[in-house]
Length: 351
Image (tube, rainbow, N blue to C red):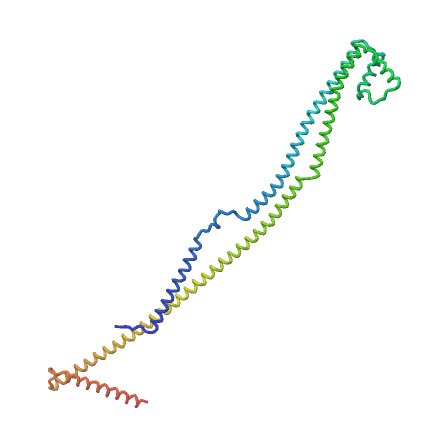
């Protein structure tokens, strides 16, 4: 049995081809997208630091720079002040040593007076003290001016020789003056260095370098904090946009997959309908063929009955030619027509 492809089958074949082409294109698109996802970009790797970390690191470095500079300046000031304190200590020790030496010489003069048995109210002692006052304006005697009598007595003493006690005491006093001058100079240096320390400390307090540095560092960190917050907001926005884009792409992919699935379902439905139509067509053709076969069998039986009747009537049908058989078929056909006419008449009468 041969079944011919109709217009439905041609349509199904064309639809199949279109679906296959679309599926191939869709597969290629997904493969390309998957390939893009698997591509590794250098920017996605940890080769570049996080911008937020970079901004925080820069702010910390800048803040530390302010504090470090102020710290270095303070350390320089501290170093200078420590050096000054060391100089102070040296001058303090020198002042103490000179004071002790001067005091030792003064004590030695007192010892000489006792050694020579000179009374403190004697003229020799008074003349010695007058000579000492004339030698130096020591703080021991103050700035008391000389009277006319004292000036006259000094003139007399310069014209006459001094006693041994007076000479030795004047020599000791001259040495004492050297140590006293050194002591005074050390005291002056010590006071100068003390004032320098005070001025440096006041200047440091006025400049407030460390306070300014801390304020600047705080300002830098606050600005960096604002920038980082903005960067975090932007990053969050980008993340939301990226997530939205991925969600949208996934939704589109699902929609496309759903559409493709629906097309496949529709194609299978059409294929099923076409197959059912082909089955019905084949079934109909098979039914017609069966009817034709039954009709042929009926004709053959009728022909066999007619030949049998003819043989019983004494007619020789054994050697009948094909023309006789054809005439028999023609007679049978006419008989069918007559039978059909009779049936038609019966139907008309019933009407």
